[in-house]
Length: 275
Length: 330
Ligand SMILES: Nc1ncnc2c1ncn2[C@@H]1O[C@H](COP(=O)(O)OP(=O)(O)O)[C@@H](O)[C@H]1O
Ligand SMILES: [Mg+2]
Image (tube, rainbow over the protein chains, first blue to last red):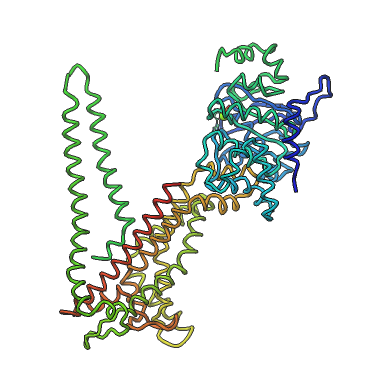
């Protein structure tokens, strides 16, 4: 069935980051335009305009409470669950309006999400990964087997788990659970992957594994990640957007944001002077 | 008295509430003591220790009393019931199909079968509806509808069983009579009324298990692009499986121990029922119908019936513990 993940795994071991210098700018996979978001009376996002280029990693940085998670949850409409949450402006996926044109479940299938706290379901490792494809109509055991293996391989955790697929996922370590959640998200073949501080609850070794993984995943997916860790943003992102109090202060190439920011507040933040 | 043993959930809930209530003033007093200025140099620890000691003694006594009550009931049952079983002969007692005290025939097999039939019927009637209601209340009902239904369920739990019995007699029995020969006093009528009676137990226990499922499971499912119903049925409900099993088993306990409503609608002939429309006598009914005038071996045979019922309830409680343990292990 789907061998793209296998190909991907092979490709990745050969070329870690195939960036061609001076190539044409990547087309925007997702974009938000004049986005204002309200939780009741409180305005969580103010006139946010951003583009998320295809096959690149965009990092969202900024102090706690500045609206990074809010933006992420707007991109896959998980904010729909929040009572009193109102969204103005537009969110575009391949140019289609996520709130007016696309169906929420359809959008979420295409825009996968990995949460800050690993949240595997209380079922077997296999069933966790197979959950998405099964829900979307894949029934044959052989097909599911292939998807499970390829997703776990793509999340760099196949070797660790292949002998215990029937074990309950809650028995895994935090780092393993998080990579399992990445595999679970990949198993529905999303186009965009949202990661909300997905390494903040993890030890350095697990973090390093997931960072490496993200660097590889962008070959296939558009990745948008929230991180508190400046070094992490610097290491693995292509683009960075800096948020403050619900506004985008500055956005652009990660190298520029970190080495030659225009706004003094950005300079202070990336230098670790507040936040 | 024996059947009050069945009320495991309310009883344990009330002890929990009791200890919580008693604990709160203690905590308040502790805060007040902490508020005393250090300059007063009051030795803080001693009154605290004393108070703790007193509280411990009080709770200990309460616990000991309730355990003593259980022990006394067991003792009473066994002391009166076991000799009767021995005199009648255990196989004759358990598997004898004739219950005719006037001829000294004490076979309770029809009543054992009757209790099992009626309980099984109650589960078939009450469990699916109860679980679906719990799912609805926990994950679908919003705002007014939800709170209205919730208070309805609470009301259902508070209705005395004799009122259920009356309802059964006036509404359900005539309804059953439409379906065939006989009076309508039947296995079917008893199953229907018991099925309704176990609803509040099944609903509240299952609903609290469902409410306790962490939101992150539900959110994780939605984030994979499945819809609300799918997430609820495939992730939330399985995550609450042990609590849902507990709800079913508690409903089972409630059904097998119920007396008054069953007596009113079951017909109570001590025969093995041959159809859903046949009359039936449960173990509980057997006891309550004849206890008033029974003497000597007859009386003891009724108490021995209580022993058998007690064993069933013990098994159900053990099953419940196994389910809870397994739930905690996950
Ligand atoms: N469900 C909610 N209801 C009301 N306010 C919220 C809700 N979620 C987040 N907020 C508020 O929105 C702001 C941004 O939150 P968030 O996006 O979680 O910040 P970040 O992820 O950048 O730390 C905060 O002030 C927070 O209190
Ligand atoms: Mg956040």
